[in-house]
Length: 231
Ligand code: HEC
Image 1 (cartoon, rainbow, N blue to C red):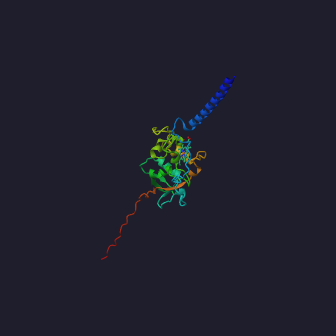
Image 2 (tube, rainbow, N blue to C red):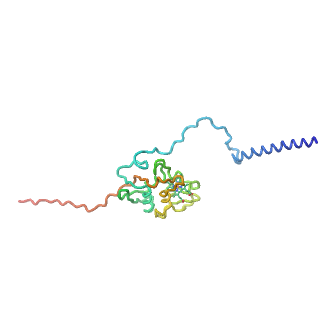
């Protein structure tokens, strides 16, 4: 009888220890996995780490010019959507210049160098806008739509790429036809349910490119009328 009670008591203590031990083990696994280098249980550092603030990456918004740009006097003014469109329709080259018509009907010229900021600069489409590439970053495994807009190669490679090794995903440039491209759809149509895609983009005017010199028309050559000297 006495033995039985002892057995129950020891049994209960043992079971209790097993349960507690198991629980602690479970918590540890949950937080740290099978590793002993995990520091999640450490005390918080009570010092102020240096530097105190993470530097802000957004450039200060400016008041002059739309889309936060300061225009230079000889630049063309064009809607950002049409500007990217002209680049796509001209074959989306990273080297060759392309032409577009600005809001005043002038023919202007530009190159990929001026297209790229639209993808990689914050505050460009509107004040406070995130750079496309801050979401659609080089690592396609974590970037939304598996799309890398941080480089020319990434833009051409397109979306829905499982890894950086996949060189051809879903074409976002509509095979050179702007208005049927995914890119057009996502910067012009109002994708309000998608973060980073904002109705404000649709009618943003930017200053880019240079007007082409007016085509040389026949300038009348001045013929000097030399009065015939009268004797
Ligand atoms: C805040 C993050 C964010 C920003 C900034 C952002 N996007 Fe997106 N984008 C998304 C998400 C989320 C989707 C939808 C992903 C999906 O459908 O799986 C998307 C989808 C797209 C798609 C469609 C791809 C496909 O195959 O369906 C294109 C094209 C695109 N974005 C271009 C852009 C461009 C150009 C910019 C900059 C003007 C931009 N994005 C800025 C988050 C962002």
